[in-house]
Length: 140
Image (cartoon, helix red, strand yellow):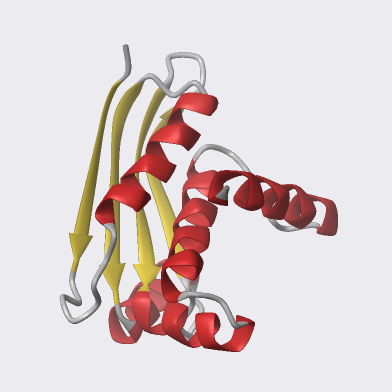
């Protein structure tokens, strides 16, 4: 039985969020990746804080849709502790640009962030393809 705690914090309450959907997606990834113990915070924020975090931790002076930070990761013990920061304002713009529902884009972005935490990367074209395939799988 998994001992994993998932917390969702919405810093922008004007956005109506389906927390059940996000939690279900996170649990599915955690189960599939055989993460047994730990915690995950999903923090829903806006452009200003995203840009601040991106500058402070990644030295990028721009906003982005998602940032992932892991504090502890040990595949041997099944331990994962981390945070995913999803930028609701950027996600809203992307949903419009990609002509998808806001909640679908939010789910994709959060899934992307969690995939980073469990070990997936998107630095190369083949890595990006693999992550996109995983995102599509977990969106179903």
